Length: 183
Figure (cartoon, rainbow, N blue to C red):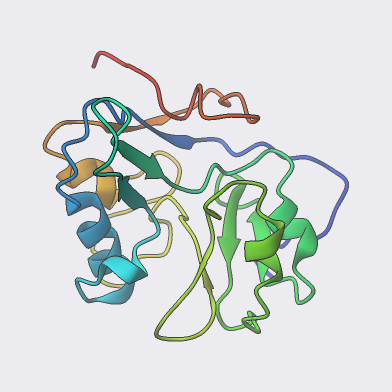
């Protein structure tokens, strides 16, 4: 199997990570629509692997939060997957990905994700796990994604509030996944 590395004690950091600046985000949800379109072929916010969460009861800058898979260094989702459908793709930048053909839809990965909300969702269409794969597998987009490739959410963000970084962000909180950057 290609790059299969399930349920191992060896930690392989991803080569790249998506980070956001929620203070720049205007809540347009273009990133969500683009994600759904390139992965699923339809504009459906529920099928997006990145989520823009808006809290109308909060004031700026705490009213918007963007959540996406962190490509955790020690991925609980991968370790919890009984079928090996969630794995570290060692041939493609050590990205944590889901093989939907092998996924049983048990939801253990969703429960195992230490973040709230979970960075993995169960597809409303297939009943299987879906998560950000840095646009590595985008059947409805003709661009190369994954490491050193392009990501639909980054391409369409009018505020440039999303970017890809190579340095592993601090994994315990949002401090390095949601921060101010200047380019």
